[in-house]
Image (cartoon, rainbow, N blue to C red):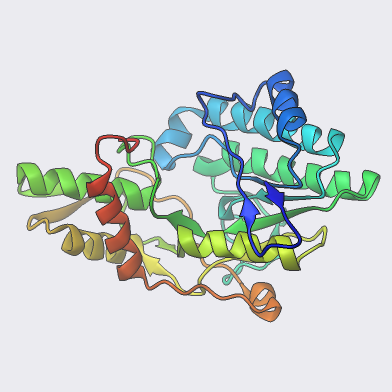
Length: 293
């Protein structure tokens, strides 16, 4: 994106996956050559929930490595003034002390179901740090909590937990089965951050943060998957029961971030979970024809 110093806003420049394959270095270079962005937020990635990551480890590892390498190389070559790389809480050790501090990175093994994605993200962080150290590039990395909101992927097989639950309960409301079966025990706890809050955090970091150290971005609270499912069921309006398939994996037991660094800088999330889910579900209803479902 291009930032104009005389104006308090950015001109946002994007491309869809159909328009630009970021795994293609030549195509990525052509984009940077044509648009000449001042700042870059590298959010593009192959993502999904436990099932998608477990089923497609090559896609999660190789695609993300290729995207990161391509974009970071182009950002360096075309002398982008600032780049924000988006990591993930799944990079942290499975049994890291909670709340999870940034310095817990690489102090233990990751959750196996997230490992391909996590390894790729760690490589991206290290590459950002490398460009800063070797070439003086102002490349920074943040670790967002579980994101949800408008424009998400609502595919029940490949989406993250919250959009998947919204889709599952919406379809159950339409067809009225007696119950909906969800993976795992429902006991793992997650920190959920509304995407509008995270967009605000990204803008804040571009303006206020410059360091090789990664920084966590979250809301500072957590809830179990079971609690989240009950809230989403109520907002969607499904009247049936929830069954838990405990033969399926749970993933990480907890992922609450230590957000003290962001708080000291002066940023905090603003959106209540119920409000965020309600807004996300309304967007889903309004965009069923074009949403990724």
